[in-house]
Image 1 (cartoon, helix red, strand yellow):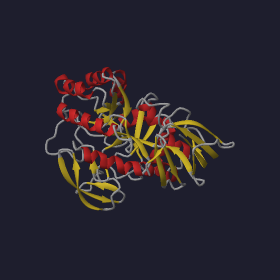
Image 2 (tube, rainbow, N blue to C red; image 1 turned 90 degrees about the vertical axis):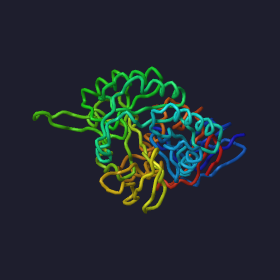
Image 3 (cartoon, helix red, strand yellow; image 1 turned 60 degrees about the horizontal axis):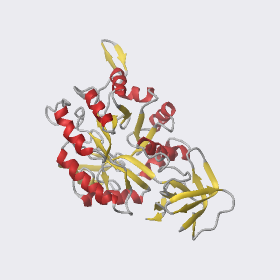
Length: 389
């Protein structure tokens, strides 16, 4: 069966294609253009709206009341359904565990999700920690940075084979470089975050398997002085080194427009990824809640468009969705729409090893598509050509 989308502005990786059409056959993009649309079994009129690749979120802890930090399948499904409704057609769900038994449970959850055709594609987990520096605003008591030893991570990496795509650590920790090499040997992308690394540390880390900076500007080192001499941190390294991919949380709260524009200017559209860092309460209205953050339930407040702990001294993730990320970059930072979409689609697809298959309108790619207006209000979502919204 074939269907053709007509009366659309196609959002390509490098431009907008007005008055366009797109032909989908058997779940794949077969052709697209601006001339006379081909015949098909079904015609979908986009009403002059944008037709875009589905968004890909590579850093997401949950949403809609569901938590990826839980070992409960129903919570994962609930979160994925919420993000799908906002145009996210692929995810790297983000727990943060080094426990082999929990990773086995996550494997079973992924296998169940992979059987379904009505949920975003599961591209493998992103483990945000726990081999990192204590969070400066949230560390309890005398929390200390861990020592990263093979007896801690080797059993976990054995269980993670084939289901974990990315893993974050603070590379400057004792054993951090060895862990980076172990990630590389396991085929897992090494990411740096929640870190006090210097630029010199990052240079060494890049030689030892790390290739990405997690949520740039947030919970990481920046310029410091050592006996009067200034030195750069992970923020500066992320902006400076061309080989590093970088995430930015673009909910309109974590970063002001000028820092988004600086990151785009330094990194370009092909090395920068828009992420939500969304927590279990993604999509919820403002108010006081109790949220499931893995091993504990936490009292939080949603206000000013973001999630905060009771002390209100930092952000506890976000409540953002994929459409909001693109809207923020397009409307607030003034980035061209196609550039904003590229950072939410093609770039994360390439980062996760899915280049040419997901995240772009190109012949042969999966027909994961989103229709939205100029305010990035999503009206329709398609997975492999099948309407799911």
